[in-house]
Amino acid sequence: MENPLKLKRVHHVEFLVGNAKQAAFYYRNGFGFSQVAYKGLETGVRNQTSYALTQNKTNFVLTSPLQPNDFAAEHLKKHGDGIRDIALEVADADFAFTEAVRRGAKPCVEPHDMTDEHGTVRHAAIHTYGDTIHSLISYKDYKGPFLPGFVAQDVKGKDTGILRVDHMVGNVELGKMNHWADFYSSVFGFHRYITFDDKDISTEYSALMSIVMSDDSYSVKFPINEPAPARRKSQIDEYLEAYGGPGVQHVALQVKDVLYTVDRLQQNGVEFLRVPDSYYDLLTDRIGELEEPMEEIRRLGILVDKDQEGYLLQIFSKPVQDRPTVFFEIIQRKGSRGFGKGNFKALFEALELEQARRGNL
Image 1 (cartoon, helix red, strand yellow):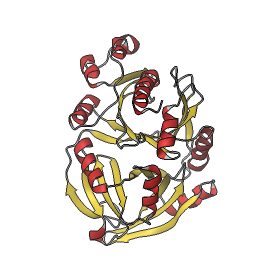
Image 2 (spheres, rainbow, N blue to C red; image 1 turned 30 degrees about the horizontal axis):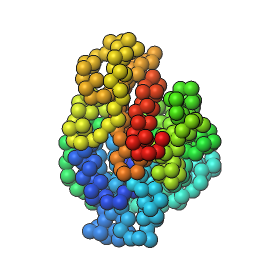
Image 3 (cartoon, rainbow, N blue to C red; image 1 turned 90 degrees about the vertical axis):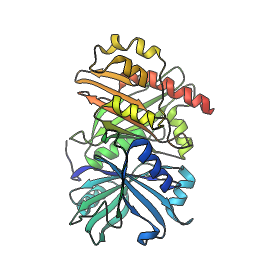
């Protein structure tokens, strides 16, 4: 295993949205993010407005176009609200960009300085699946609130215990999963951590396949999903149709206390998928004793899975926009580095119920 681009971490996730001001309100009041920086008309930016939000080590940027001819307007027309940029901090953006292109990445933005009165950040970007990109960011002497061009804001949210991005899942077309897994292997030096096929992730009606790509530290993980042939339309097919092509399906947010976080999020109005209650009748026999009270796990609708390293607790939100595209996973790891294989069938059935309600199964 190697780290050829000298990758450090996920710097931020940028969403292109129809109304960034209202989206920022949702993520502050629903998920507990604090608004720390802003750029837009008042800062001399004429074509876009952006809000930077943070919670512990999780950074989101919400961006809306201000002009109909801005690329973000075309992106929104095609995809609706969604994730445009998984931005990565690297040791040296120039080196990372040059090496990525040498290894087969398609260039998007050439390396350049981003500078304001607080200092300079070096920025470049490469393309990945669909219209998604990876910005490559390295710091020179920047001491400002978020990135050059942003001005500080202090709009506090009520922290819900979200710590960091655990993983981000990309949905791609049938036959393209291995292509993009190979991309992350050859360009980033990632390795295939776990592979799931249609025997692992299927129901009577639909199926998918997935490869989890990870860096050598297991801090940056990108599962890649593709649909598998089945009797009816899978959740991946539904996403690809609704989003207008490949893109980020969901962001998994790691938390320190899933019972606390999910209780707070539900009180804040965040909607989650619910598996049948029969799932909990068998849970103790399948998993064994847990540190968390079973009655609270059942009440909140949390899923549990176990492997040789420990167990994890997870739950999945409903889509957070009108198109059935991007959603969130809340995950707490108690030793397990897995992805909830034992929950796939119950989760898929809950997803299919939502698909049927939308007329898309």
